[in-house]
Length: 330
Length: 283
Image 1 (cartoon, rainbow over the protein chains, first blue to last red):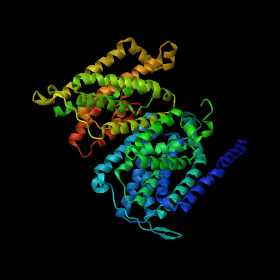
Image 2: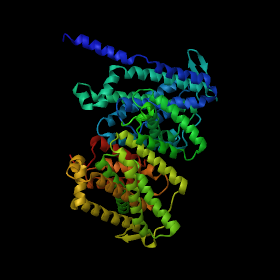
Image 3: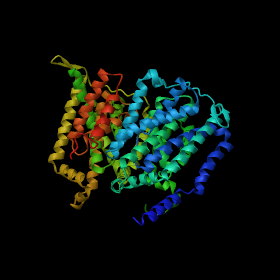
Image 4: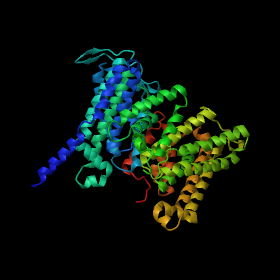
């Protein structure tokens, strides 16, 4: 008992050390604000990138930190989007309140479905996450008096953003929308950063690396998985809510398998397990998407697939560590 | 009612032939191959194109579809799949999704995105009035053919030398390799036969399931359900799972069309939550 105190403070200082701000982290945030200031003509693209980035960051929490492979993360994205759109149409059109509703709705869904992914192998988890997304797709398709069915929910009109700095109405050029999305992304990154550098985040990585060992040193694996899955769902819901609010509609396509696969790809491009992979991946992915689909809009999926296949064969870790390209062996 | 049951059985048998290759790849190589449906699509397109462009009779197309996709499977196994066996599941999933995307767009590009129709020979059209129940001749043909295939598969696995080698490799590849079995050759042969069966299933199913470039994506979840619910250690597991799925799907779509695939997905999640290793897995 006597040496308990110094060892806790050693642990605490090690946590503090790993949580210290790095220069490149600040650079990511600086780049986000500079992009908005210097590229006013690209606001719509920046808005898209910020939303995809937030979605990918939420997947990183469960995949990169807790090691859960999900093929149905779009479930929460779509759920958040529909929640925000329905709230704006039915109740009130305040964006921040709508976003809060989207986050809360997805968090509840995440908490409920997290119970389904606690057991089984990777395959079982893939199937269950895929199944949840497919069920939501079917529901959104069939409950057409609420969701608009295959037509989607159109004509979502948002009121102005009420902030302490004044009222900002959404404009066509997307200046306000992109600022809104970027600020939410930055806030989410700060929250996620705080989370993964906390003892909770470190224990998640412990259970990702060796679940049996984590539980035998007394960590409650189930509780942690439920918690992180819920938080990730909430983030994904925020991304979906942002999309519905800034684009003005929500459609079935949000629940589609494509979405879940794409967000996995985005995250893998940027790299998993260091939080900013989603942001970097989103930038690369959206730029690639823009370039390739301008060239061949119908067959862009072919090049996406080819890219995935090649990337997986050469090894995805090499993409984020280019200095290892010409070294032999893994 | 009986007609419905029979259609469900035919559908289930078809799903079994389509998915059994996936069960073997998964059990043998522990490889999650989401691109399995692409092989089925290849078989379907081989048949449709041979029939419509070259006028080859339907019965001749079936073995060609089998052999063609088996060769394709062997080729891809050698070149692309092999390096992926040792990688984590996430990489395998992304890799095979990539293959699916490529297959879907490639078919779209070369053949077009419309639904392909197959003209069955006259002796397979129409219904047989047995015991006052109408039974589609083609459905009966599917059931008989898939039943024979299942028996043959079971025989090969249980009674032949190759079957016992295969089972040994599934149980423990390292020990099997240590005993002098050429595990990687067994892998390739099995992968080829599994792909070939998928191709055959695709050819048979073109009339029942419909065939268009999104086939691998549309039916991916069905194949995975068969495998994950049936387990990968036996052949009877996936067979029963496929029959269950076929009957549930046909009956669900007939009685409660509004809910559609909803029932199937919910059932799958419920089963997987209660028995994560599948309904019929060996302990």
